[in-house]
Length: 299
Image 1: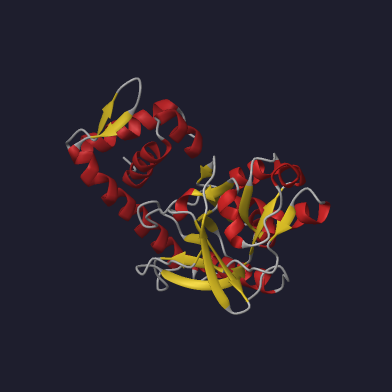
Image 2: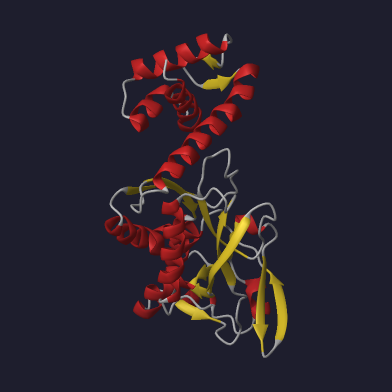
């Protein structure tokens, strides 16, 4: 039995949620996936999965086996990288995670140019803003827009992200235009759920202020709030990269322009420098250089 492939199958089944999805991801038949799982259980001498028509779940032994399999796969990638280090050609698959808005508005275009330049490199992009364990999820690089960093990860600041308070002309016609941050307390403000208590902060003439806002909708992804803002549902605080074109077109109106929301840092997060894949070093430098050359991203 190819134990490395069996370990990969086991991990994919758990990450994808089903044998069918794992088979599609690995480009093998569902029967082959079942065979690898059965052989892995035979080799381990224990049952690793509870199988039912509705879902898969780990047995106690499977819970112990899963991190071992992930570690085995990570070790195999590092061993492959050692051999590739003797070759100047970057290759391999990089697993990256970032928010939907940043991926859609900017990152996907940068990745397209990068993979055209280095055709032997491919990217597996995990879209989402929630915190993930980079080691367990086998993520090489996380791109996060935040000022609150995980102290257990290595962070490289790449640029800054400006934000803007905005609303649609329709909403403002119906509810009026706020003139000061305190006026937001009387408006329907669409809040970003991951920030917890919805406290919007501003800087004006060197002084900081904050206002507690609330509204009929909160979400964990800014693109959802953007669509609701365009539909006239309320006021939202959006990253400038998402709404710059909409502001120019007049579909959204910037508010409180004399009051600046704090800038957030755009950071690359990763677990280690020592065992970084050569392709990832190139990608990290490529992203940093692309952001540095774009006037939208202050430093």
